[in-house]
Structures are given as structure tokens and as C-alpha cells.
Length: 295
Image (cartoon, rainbow, N blue to C red; front, side, top):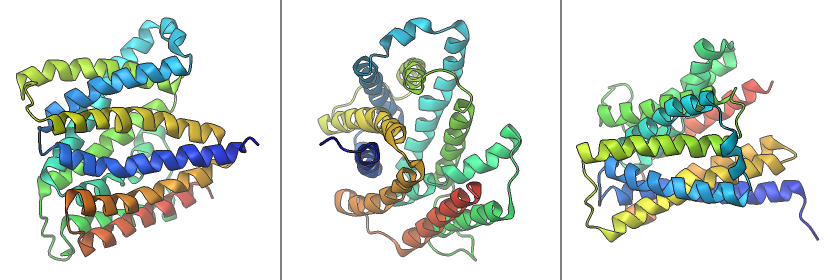
């Protein structure tokens, strides 16, 4: 018996969430063997190959021949945002911060998107959404100060700033994608082609490509295959098959919880109470914001 579309959607969604749950640990472990520029170089090269294969499997390669000069120009700019700027900033944040803190702060991107939608999309934000924003950023303060909120004693201001800055790039990227006519998988592939060219130019001028660690290369390939490649397509398939997209989107709240467990086991970080409290506040704010936009 064939599974229902919603069951298939749950399958794709859970696969995406489980993979996403591993990437914070993968980032931190790989950055023990190479710096953030090298990581992006090897991961983005891998992702281009993976996305090409995914397009071939979906029989979308002929769509590349339909690209217009405007499509190319758009991807020239979008590739600067993602993968170049987003991942350079995010990986540097993971270099500076404990993995548990960087991954928790990264979940504020949905709140950042709400804030950016005010000037960029002309959207109005109601009282409940402003409450959601305040709750989430209270969680940021709890994490960044290790619970010393009233003292405002930030443990790593630069790392915190970079982690939050990455959410600004990520939110801007997806807001700009909202009115894109191009197939999302094709757009992602072309963006990553240009982004990879940028990073291939940057790497010899900074870190260079010399990496002596097979473990580091394996980690970068893993990140390129899963974080930057397959998972995006799996999530799109989940939304495509879903008869109730809201139920699928709620699966994302499992990811940070599983991720914290993996960080403790794989990376060896003791999970701080302030991280747990801050993450609960961030996810609570995101949930409230999502509920506010649907009412």
C-alpha cells in the first residue's frame, strides 16, 4: 500500500530535521582541522556536485538552458549572500563560540526575517509579534551572558555578533527569494556555482587549500553533501507532499533539542543551563511569532 502524501511529507521532514541536527557538531569538529575559509571552500565545491546530481535526478537540468541574463545577474548577487557571506560569517562564529551557543543563536533567523520584512516588504508587525521578538532576544541575552543578563557581561561579543549577523544574511537571502520565478532547486544550484567561484578566488589569498587532515576533509564533504545540498531538497519535498504544511514546519523544533544531545556526546561540550533556558526562550518566541502570523 502506498503511503499517503502527508506520511511521505513527514518522512522527508524528519530526514531533514535529523540531518540538520548533526550539522552543529559537524561544524565544530571540522573546524578543529581547518579554518572557516577552507571549510567553506571544500564544502561548497562538494555541494555544487551534489546539487547537480539532484537536478539530474529530478530531470531539471534542461531548465538551466532557459536561464536569462537577468537570472544570471540575480545569482551573481545571491551567491555573494549564500553561500559566501552567510557561511563565512556562520563558520567564524562557530570557531569563536561553543557549538551549543552558536546553533541556538542561529535559530533567531525567523525573528530576524520578521524585522527585515518591515522595511523590505512593507509588512506590519502586531503586538504579539513584537512580544515574540522580545522573548527571543531575551533568550539571546541569556545565552550570550551565560545567564548574567542584568550584568550584560557578554562572554564573546564578537562571536555573538557574528552568529546574529549570519541570521541577518540568511533572512535577507530568503526574503529576496520570495518573488523569484525560477525553480528553487535551479536557483540554489546557480547561486552555489557563483558562490563557489567567489570562495575559490578568496581562499588562495587567505588560508590556502593545504589541509593535512583526512578527518577535516571528510567533515567538509559531509557538510557540503548534507547541510548545503541534500537537506534543502528533502525539505522542499516535504513541503511539496504535505497536505498540512504547518504540521511539517513544527518538526523543525525537534532539531535544536537533538542537536544539543549530539553536541554533548560528539563534541564533548557540557550543556550549560543558560543555553537550555535561552534556547527555550528563542524557540518560544519563534513559535509565538509563527502563531501570530497565522491569526
